Image (cartoon, rainbow, N blue to C red; front, top):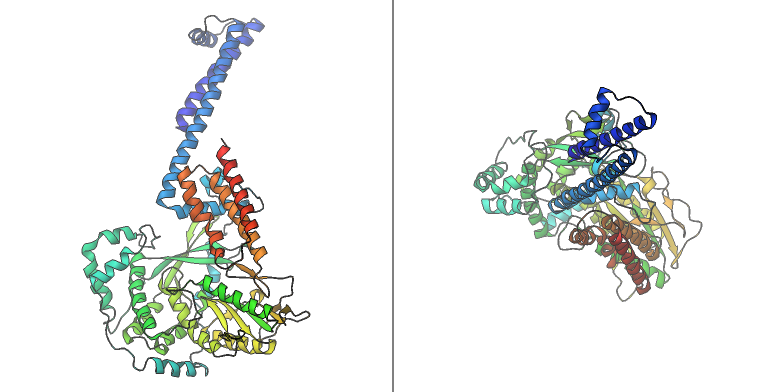
Length: 585
């Protein structure tokens, strides 16, 4: 289409140029050249005469045709762009939302950001590494370093004895896996889920039903082999680094690993067996609400958090709280500790053996955009850490933290006012932890228990992102200094003017509803603005609004107090945003 437009526009511009040259010749009364004779003959086909007046009229007609051609070109181009965008939206809406996210990042300070066709078309990345070693060196040193966990810690013996009481005998049964179970698991996976180095999409595994029986046999055989060794290609990953807010450095990235879909299929089968054992004996501490079914996760945690804070404030009671942030949590888990957790939780022997062998085979290559182009690093072997890319790893992580959760649960915590009087010690969602205590000294003891437990796991706190706060008789205690825990750097103590973002909600001694809702409303309207200024169809815009913009608000609907006046005001602003872009050409 572009080539046709350029050819037609070039022909029109040439005609205009010939007419302008003939007008100049007539005005200057110059002689005709051989080229001029050819041009006059061409002009005579389109003009009644070659007077200056007729030539001027002819030039204006050609200019009008050029403008019309240009308008038609851009109209057709926008229609083609809209057609492709809508096709891509219905095939893979996640990629469209990712594009919207990049546009929002570049227009973060604008109340009404617009859909940027340049950003959508080029996907320019201003952040690139110089060479692949710059991108991979930090992660290589992190993953290939031996873990610092301590499976011989004294405190773990109490948990071990408790687990032996809950699970008196270690299950010795083998793995019973059939084709129906394998088929059910693969059918539950997305067709377009990003494949790993083997590049085989789930769509083809679903269609190859004739292979499912043999695949089930192969999976089951891994539990029976005495000298089990997984080949490196099976558990190989392809890791992409996603920049976090702040300075562009290798260590300020989020590693996401694309694993082979066959591997993820296999680990999903293992996950089903692990979950069955966990649920049968109730092994996971109930305060851990991440990577678990039959609970609302963050919503449950935020509701309990609100209940505790309001209880202390309304009852004018003392309350000390701490927010814990773990540095590189998934990437620091000690493999020795992970193996010990399968023994401690008394999983079937075959499952413990398979997980130990599987962890020893984890490997990946980092893919990054550099000044040399797209580069791939040499293979990196995981000696510690978990590859973030399949459904099994979140369960492995919460399993490693489970003994710590039980130890913290045994502390004094904070007791709600009568007649409830329930003890609340902590909240936990994967690695996001919040601790509660009735005084500053008691909180310090609880934090010491949590710190020692996490160090046994191989995890370290990020003191800069941790915080504490103390309330005396329901009010923020003024003049409390930073808290010192063992050999850690001082942990910041919040005053009444500071907040901490926990599970997406700003908090002090209570959840700051006004600040939370203002931030959510701004993000919601910005997303709406991007969606409704895009060339998506009206139906696609409605779907995108429900899937991409509305969840910003619905996530908070269950936990925050929404004044009716604020909701009405937000509704009016939303109508303005939609109406403004619907009127746009």
